[in-house]
Image (cartoon, rainbow, N blue to C red):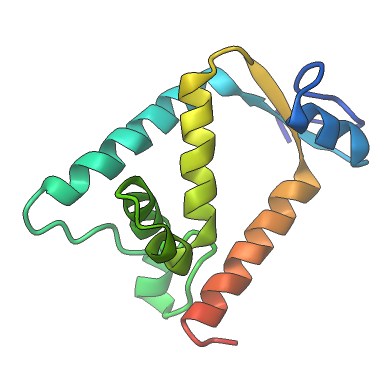
Length: 142
């Protein structure tokens, strides 16, 4: 898979992500932070601006619309908009990772120093599974 390296690489000396990547064995995902910085800024802008539009329905989940089964990202739009409006409880109820996405986006925009970070794939997998378990419970599938 492109961008995936085996072995412990890290996001920079003294970084939390770097320490995590060095501590966990297995492949990592090399992430270009520059591209994510723009996406994070766009997410923050849309999260603040969308609630101001009249009749803002949000974005429906394609998987849930087609099958009724929620995906791991279900509720992210609601969670991000609620977090940016200061409604932490609503954000966490929709999807706890929405709050994480907002915090990561703010850090990426405010701290432009790192250019690339290595994220252990196991962290991404555990995060996606935890988010999916949350959504399956929220929509009463489990």
